[in-house]
Length: 309
Length: 313
Image 1 (cartoon, rainbow over the protein chains, first blue to last red):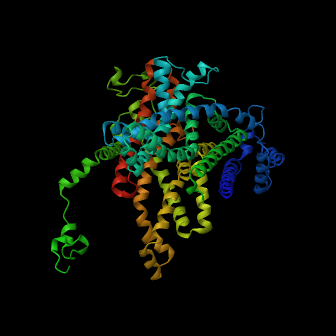
Image 2: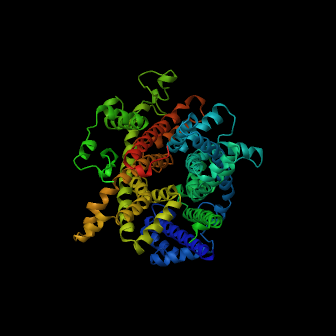
Image 3: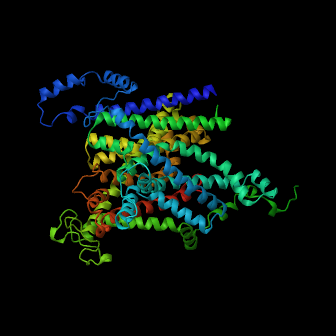
């Protein structure tokens, strides 16, 4: 187990290191920070002087080591727009993102598990066909457009729900949460449904299901207690590994609904060339993803020792 | 044993002379129709896509208007299904440009970006996938690690960052989407190559002294084509959705070139006007119909070309 754990942690460190290189390349090599920090009409000498002051004229490797050293201490510099440390701006956005991703995951599971069970149990039936239509349409859906349509329908025309924003803590927050949750849920549910369905199709042909039926158990019990329990393990694994994709969906959802999460902050900082915040946000997202992935790997390794090596 | 009845022979024991007769039956029109009916949704998807391509290519012939010039006095005319006139079947936008014309020209951007960025991704992904699968060892480790990192991180964020830094343009969008989405090809190709390179015909090619390059080009790549086409189709749809999101944020193909994503962004100004809900609806619908058609076609292609990865439909 210790070896497995060490391997997973190494992978995690490599992944975060890799992302830090990519971010550094984007912000320091492809992009010239001075062009963002100084007004367009700055004379060349002043520009050079500024580069020297900021240390942008040093060898690129040294700049990277410097960047990494500060990043490890949680120091990404100060935001160009708000006089606050970049990391604190990022960290205060995490709860909103976790709230949205958690509620969307719950919604996706509530849709996907019954749908997946039914469409595997009654294969090629009407239910299965409806599920297939849902999956195909969901995977082709541009979710930012779905978000706009829901805002227009429920926020503008019917006035049932607030069109965007975060709301006050309490019932108001829940009302604001509904539409973003539906959008991100639609993003996540199709994949989940296919996983449940194929897992169930596989489980229903297994001997233990036949045995359970032979014991005279009710079909409901066979489906949920015997088949689903086995089908659900790969679903959890894949959902965990898809956490990065889910955050990608959250970036889009948060932008459309002005939901003050880490995704919306990142998009904002990118559009305003606020590099310290972009760097802090991207690295934070990478750390979140790595933590979730590693946790899932370890949990699965504990549940199913065959996966360890 | 020696007197076994002839009809008890298995297919493997059939004489060579008998086989061609069974295998070479010509496919009749009925066979094709039956196959098409089985894949009817994919056929439909293919036809819709074909129509979209035709509209995109022939846009100037299909409309009397241009996508970038509008008459401000004719602004915000409703589409025919909301009581508008046939002069502007899908209405006009906030500066009086014909909406149908803009949607038709928008198809050009969507399809071109989708196709070109998928090509970029395919070339990079297939080359790196072959390197990793064929040579294994350190090369494999390096490429696989990069693939894993890129596939777990939401690529939309890196795409946004790179475009913001480079500046938005058609070429930059194509390159960034292509460079950001190659890992999926590399992952699949790597597995396929390491499977294929252990097969006898590759060993045979090596024995007769062919170079690695020739073995890869003539014996391995042809066996990858089906998988590549199947992934590529789905990827085109995904990248069209991503391109529209970039444009929606103003970081995609720049105006005056009409793109569906940017039309979505422009229409947001009218979102809170209860009468103008059709403005944001139409460009999104165009994206949705396009990606749906491509995905349906892709499902059929997978069933035909790649029976091992057949979906559980």
